[in-house]
Length: 236
Image (cartoon, rainbow, N blue to C red; front, side, top):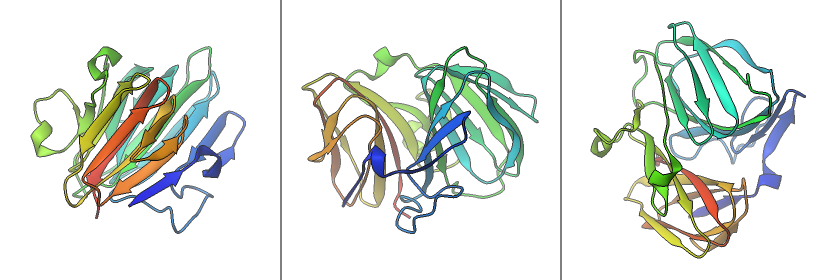
């Protein structure tokens, strides 16, 4: 089961300071066929203008992962956390019982992020925030796990999230093939942050997405040098 979502087909909004594209129904964009992919609920492709950002607002019972493609994002929350996350790196926020946060682009250039929301396995967890640098050399021709709540990923250095799932990334040189097994009952959704590739035979260009379920593996062949971000979660 493969669902290819070309960038041009995504919903979205242009607020001037924010240009957003939505792989799943979000805000004023609603498509009943694009509500979620397993426990993955949101994948937003956001471009945030210099000196702007999301003012303080609340969340609860959602795992929110931010992958910075270009520029940097600065986080502040009511738990006293503050931090800057740069290109290629990741921050996580487990909203749990409730958190109020703001996200700003304090850089002199546009910041581009993937904002990923995954539904937690249990509601009412303690809120948490974290960020970490992941040098891209660690993901050449192989997936590096960036954030995870899968039991087998404990101790890997991945940022913790409250769901049996993972966010991972890889860089693949033109002509290389990367295969990632997909266990029964698991689903994957991936987006090309850069480049072009075929994924289980389907052609993808930069910022296209594809959902994969009920397959034994995800096989990616780069037709151009590519940077891939993938979420793996339970189908239900």
